[in-house]
Image 1 (cartoon, helix red, strand yellow):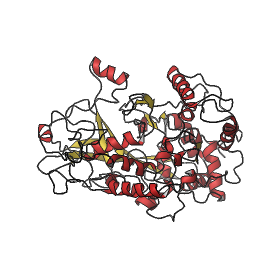
Image 2 (cartoon, rainbow, N blue to C red):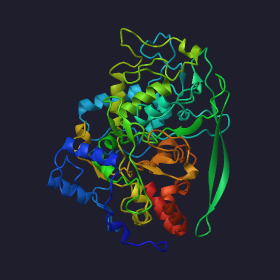
Image 3 (cartoon, helix red, strand yellow):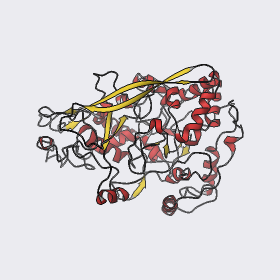
Image 4 (cartoon, rainbow, N blue to C red):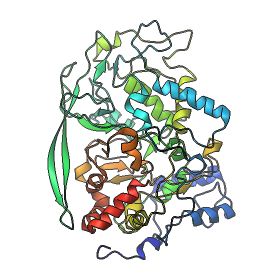
Length: 521
């Protein structure tokens, strides 16, 4: 055990928090919308007093690390997949779907894998690709519904990774739109919101993402030396002239798809209850919620999805990906020229794939809804080795050094979740769904909505130990720079700096146990 770490620490309750006005307002809305308060979990208006007591007990931090917690192996509650662990481990339907729902799931799976083609085409229900795009299908980025990776060499085109683009707000109107959350960012004037490295025939692609690495060594307690690769990003082969000199670049790899519907079903009060933007409890961690405007309702709500929690729902995330990544218009994003900008006249002149007899967009109803249903019901695999002695020791270190302060282990989802299969489920995502300052090392210096250039949403850890099994690599973080779980931990800074330092000071066998615990998730 590292010096200075107390075994009593994890069982101490947090100090009362003085909530910022915005968080108080949202919590008030949550309680008004879902029912009366009760004394145990006042933010959970969906629960009776009896249910609140059960939820408080089952989600309390563990005190006994000699054995697993109740139901810990079922990461996704009743939706957990117990299928054989292999390369398809992230592609199974939620176990509690009904037969008719399974039919929709598999139709959605077909649409998720669907390869779109450029217009005009004889396959009228499949054309509309681009004209500028990053991938021809959802599956091409989320291979086997898992995690993307950066290019493997200078000539490799990694379609599971791309660059986000934006520029600072310059006019009063742009600043007002950002403040009112009508916009999350200002797109680059010529190249839009992301660099498109592919184009349909007859049109130049926007350019190519370039990445170079240098190595930085960190000496760990016990004599082990870890090497972190430090990336530098730029763009080349620009097809439409120079970029704005103040362009901000941020790389993104595709995250795994499992458990998204369950994350959406977490009661907003549970997320807001962990927010502490001014660090009132003095623990050095000041997570804050991402508040965004829901494109469906127009209301300001919690952001949950994306590396900076900039989308409130799976539907909004999927709609944006259809339009931005593949260039396919849909009811949520009806522009049939994808991310083409006014300065890309040749792109705007290309034919689109709208078939009037099918609808006014290239992916008319119910295409998007079926893909969303599929995405919301990809099952989380069951944990492995939950009762292994090394895993249990690693779990204790995970809590002791503060990892669980941000990677919150478990929740009981809302009784009022939109889908019955997601309601009142004990789930183990290992995320607080909040934004945290992760330090200068991970900073992209590109603000998005409420997230500044150093802040990232706490990534869920469920399924992380199966990354190599599913995707054949162990590259982590928002841009895949970490080549293994230890490197991913060592990149943590800012609010996670004390936890990172504690990992460095662990004895080698203790570090091995911590990693074994993460590999069991």
